[in-house]
Image (cartoon, rainbow, N blue to C red; front, side):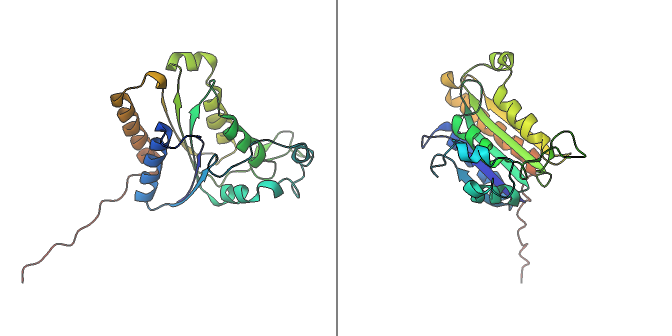
Length: 211
């Protein structure tokens, strides 16, 4: 398993970082090869420039500004997003990562003479996890349409392998969370990860035979 974790939070020690750590612990226990992209710590620039937009459909040029990030996406078979939900959607940092990295020729194929619509380009990705926190309640988030969740679990997921497994967990009403609610959410994330990637095999211990 080759797992790419996209982490987006500007503050060290946030609850979102605790969620990330649970995800990473589960991946390590499963023996996965792991790459972590910490968008804020890495100083990722989320702004799609005018030049990038001009070259957006040119598959010979559109990778150049973010080649390292694209290499990570091409490398992985498991893609996991960990972020806070702000205004019901993705933080600008994470949305900018999608704008600049998920370009034609990488995330999808453009229409051509024989295809009238875009086609998936991430068919090597067979697992996707989405773990977030929301200040709003579950019902209000769903009433608005949960645009962040929809972007990832419908939009990006549609570009992945046809039978790509998914996992999602959100802590709603985060601003009024308690120690108990946060602990319960971390346990929920751990359980979701077990279903997504499988539980780690138990460690076999050698049986001592008396001399």
